[in-house]
Length: 353
Length: 154
Image 1 (cartoon, helix red, strand yellow):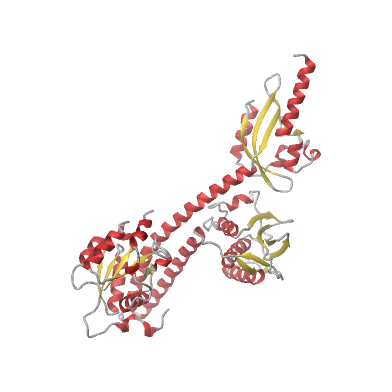
Image 2 (cartoon, one colour):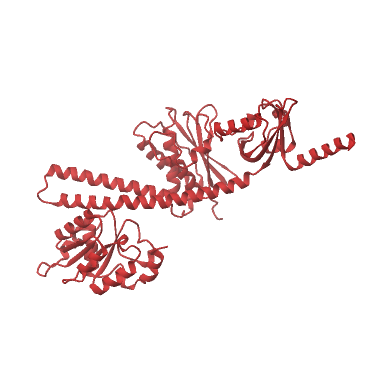
């Protein structure tokens, strides 16, 4: 093939690739030297913001160190790497890309550049995640039901027997007080089992117009009471907002998020802010605590992921489940300055005219 | 909670021989406490730890007027156990012992009488008395147990 023709063919292949894929080139240290329009579009950065930057600009912090190290080992020795990557756009939104990284080698067969060809798989990953979550939650529900039975059966025997001993005329009054206390502890234990079941096997939501302010006041009072004086003050907004939600589920969600905010480790007041936008109502619970310490906040929603010494690691997973049952969303955001914001978004209730 | 005057204790006539209640559950403390609680309330309570043992006791006079039966004991053969129980003690009323809000495999509309574990002894006495006195919660005989039980296994 004459030289001119092969150059034209290369040009055409590049044109076709740019139409089909998200393309970037970095130097051997990972500094971006080329991006195509599709890359700019999905990452929401302009070309000038990307060129000369480390590729980590789109890192979402989701993948483990081992995973990233494996990727680099592969391409640094001149091999092609294929996989799925979760990246973060300029506005903080997350996208998934099916990725092929091809090392371009120099005369010594060392990589001089890396060519990354990606395809947007965000939607597919979202659907996969939904299926995985549903399966995990269904399993959790079954597990909880079995545990509940295994706990309640002996609990019934112990509680019943204590009631019999309490009722015996010969029982010493002091002993009777101890038995009373034991029975009340057993009742509390049974209530906990009931709670776990309520969360792990939630009922269908009963959606109705719910006035936000009273429910925030109520949840705040409970959170402060649960904190036993260790919780900082909760500032409740003056709002007339009415959302479409399940009253009891919404209360459980707000209580959980407020208790998290209480435990965030700051004496500054916790602020609850309510705003409305395009038929959606945002409820922000904002603290001045330590934030997420570099952890991707999405990870905190995974069941059994916990950063606390005590707790089941179910709190935020349950919150997300209850919110999504009500047709809403919940995210954790870094707060300007310091701290975190938990944002619950629910549909606004529109009064029929 | 029910008013104290409605408690089952007061409903047991003193001059007659006590009404027999059979408790079938594999948790010994459940059997012991239910039997003790019911005896205090004036019933004649007997216990069994398995369906087979329960059937044998139910068939012997005086037959129980009420049977408290753990739903898990029938091992999926709930229909057969019920049929045999009906044969052994045709007049007995049934109360299901269960850890769940309703008997597994049943619908709320089936209206099966249940005692939820963990229970309150005073309430159990009341439920047993109600079962003897009348059937305000629905008649257990009206339930199509084959449908209920057919689904219980799935």
